[in-house]
Length: 335
Ligand code: SAM
Ligand code: SF4
Image (cartoon, rainbow, N blue to C red):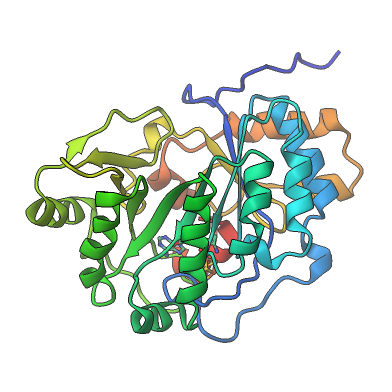
């Protein structure tokens, strides 16, 4: 007789599995320099990507193990064809209470009404600067106007906007305050992210701007930042500022201060399961799916992977058998 399936799966460090980050593609219409090199990117052949049917099956299986929240990411989710009908189907899977996405916003605006209709409550929008020339230099594409259209379309549709801004020394430090100022009159979250070294080898990442320095810079210029109580699993430390409608956030993505309550797993576009952002993939789900695994086989493999998690991102990094972090691009991991 097979072991009973837990309704909530806890890892070997007592953390529940609640949140799946699903990379639906490794392709992208931008070339953010902190994420990938400008040229020479080897995209996966289409047949190596999980199909929508395979992803739907996996989400249903994971919902049975306690996953309640799914975030679509990539690459850029909207470069994959027929994304919206796929999302619509995901939104009806029993147990999935929250469906959301991280997008660069270039192709998103026309789909916003549909997102609102299917019940998407919040979207993470990546925006490192509102200066058109710097945007073009950071992303290597002149697409700021379309991203801003998405920003305003989301606000108009009543979808909560969480801006993700990667803080890069020598690139967008002058943009920290203008982005933070958006929170004064708009009910948005603006979250500043430490740069991580997952850039596909495009440059060596250092961390002159860590979470402490970002916070000091914000406080020096905006006044006191009052911490908001975090929920288990939150990666961002959130703050309010007197007189501001929205909130500020800081994500210590490289300092890894939040691993203690991490409740997430990641699936890469080719079906690699990661139980930590910093591991190199712990299970080839695509091979299981295409090798004829039953749902019970998938459940058993997922349970085994989740019950053998590294304690934190440092341990996961140490356990990587092969190459350095910087050889990977965040576009294959999904952020
Ligand atoms: N293309 C979508 C986008 O940019 O929003 C989704 C995928 S992207 C890989 C997910 C998130 O990872 C984005 O917010 C992006 O800014 C962030 N990201 C990418 N590379 C990063 C890096 N090296 N360090 C920190 N954050 C990074
Ligand atoms: Fe594309 Fe997102 Fe990576 Fe930028 S961060 S290159 S938008 S996947």
